[in-house]
Length: 327
Image (cartoon, rainbow, N blue to C red):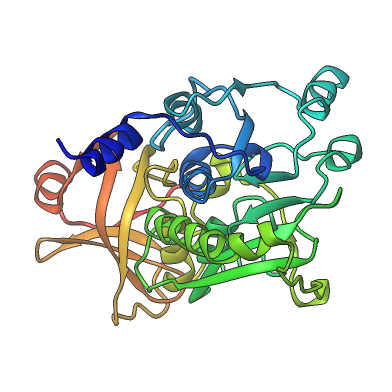
């Protein structure tokens, strides 16, 4: 072995330490947005000192990835407080002296004592194009209200929800038949792209922030399962928007036919009209339809009394007559 080869081998085998200071952060995160955005921070060399996340609720449909699992993979400490604003948690985080806070789909508001800790600011990733759809479940609300575009916004956090200065945004389209899951997947990618693009400037202290004009948007609250009950007096388009906004893995849009509970899982808006006819559920030519207050929906997928069935199965059991919806 030559002297040059020996030196190269020794260099490969030796452990080197980069003593340049790393940007440090505490990350508050949950869900797929939390997983992808935490991955961006790690890919760009941010030293994540602690991850604050939620304990999965056994009553919730856990269809998404685990932030705690990703943190464990990288040896990052994790805590899951019910309330991150307690004195104990605040002091634990203050002792870490982080440069930044990042909040990615974390469900609790951070109060002033916490927000005052990071030396270079606290930032949140929100699932809309702020200032539109501030507050809870912005993806679902955007679909319900018939939007054709949404996205993700990285903004500085204040004590008021989603009203801080904007650092980055990434838009995505909402197509006419997209469900909340489709749009949430796009918004997750938009969050990853927005963060990845702006993070170098943010870490260097050169990122520009734009003040929000809150008059251009509004605040929206959370939604409950009962908010998915269909009002069949509405138009076919409005009902279609509700169905896709709450389609699985969300609870689904609910109604009753023949006194039995029905979950409407997928619909398509048709060009059919049914002027003056009462809202009703019926089978015709191997397809299921619903007459609405205005227009007709094709029911692509539905469950009757907890059992998913198709048009032929429904017609074989109940016939092809029209069944008015129970309200």
